[in-house]
Length: 282
Figure (cartoon, rainbow, N blue to C red):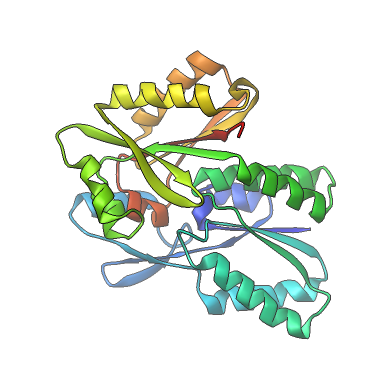
């Protein structure tokens, strides 16, 4: 069975390579050049460019690349599952479905399940890791699909950004929402709702927003101590470690992964972004 993921999952390329996950890279445009996320550009470069006043642009996975990938996959006769970045944040999912259906016309036996996770960053990455774990344990593609859809429906995203203007410029939040970040040392707190980024609160200073994240994890989390959690950061490892220490002190989870946000999501969220991902009980 074959697992596919796009670079919106923010897992390191080393993980994808080591666990036989095929990558569909989104595109970053910087200084007039196009780069494949994870493959051709490191997100640290993107954050440095943003700090220097540049505004990278992004686009979905190339339709031609997706079509070619599905054609190659159809030849294998294997089952496959593609765990896709939220359709509310990228056109990658819709294009993948369209290209699959086109290939399937000439390959009616092709079995490729494509899941719109409505998740982003390591919220999606945790789903990919679960699919890998189940595949390696011998589970079939339909069993994996059911579990991934269930987890995706319970994946909580809580994050704070340095400046909401980055998200507003990229159309990821409304310009009206960007007022949250307009005051000195105000830290907005956002979550993902139906696949969209939604500002929910604002707090003065990082310590207060971190405390509120812990409170929301307490309120929303489903036995957080039994979970593997994830933290992604916009070139702010110290902030991620600080947040991890607070989470470990309160919940003692099985594990907390930390990874840097990828180039595509980082182009919109900006430096200093910190996100935590866990399963809720709703």
